[in-house]
Length: 302
Image 1: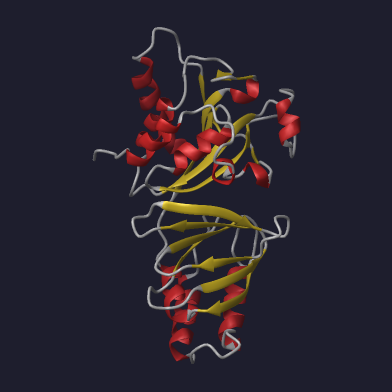
Image 2: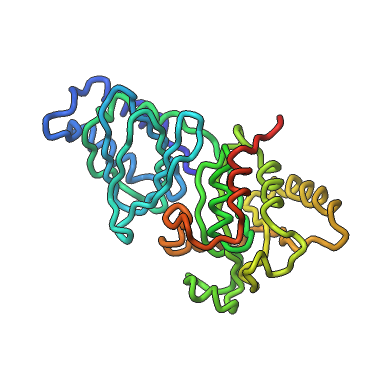
């Protein structure tokens, strides 16, 4: 993740303290808006901007240009909803409701275009400074619709995104991957807060959602695209991964059929696949509803 320029944000906060209340047209004071533009225009993909709205103020409406995933959390850090704002999806803005946190993750460099109601500068800018460290892991557990929905329920998971991992073609579509000729596995990108949930616990939860001895088959779904795997980007995570694999192997006579590999590549799936079961509550899923309830209640013992 890109480290936010602390000096720039300090300057922005100081400017906010001097700025008058938002004008009747609800736009920023121009000099402050220019600073925000320069700041957000420098963001790299993967940067997360936490935004909090004061409980006594009206909604804030933030309009961004570029592809941005917006995740809403309650005051316990639990995910309420997640969506992508982009030109492709036709969505350019998001309502920042009262007394909730939003994580704005840049999927490509983006610019804050407009902010209405608020006031943004006195409350949300302070929130930008309160960044929390995150870690990433990529998990293939069969059909990615259910696997994503499962991990979204776990406290401490910040962002999920479905896509295709460790294949041998460029920019595959869902139809391409469905042929089983691309080498890709349906995979869920999971970004989490390590101070809330550990990688070890997430992997233990992963094994509860798969049949780890089944090769290229989970539930009724069959094919190499449905193989299971743990794909990591940080070599320092490998000892934890190996520990969990070793513990799980003790529960089975046959060897685990779960890949344990560095991430070679990952391509985001089409937008209609993202948060699929939120959009289609009655949609197909190879995982039972009871497993989602289990994930919502699961707590790590520290």
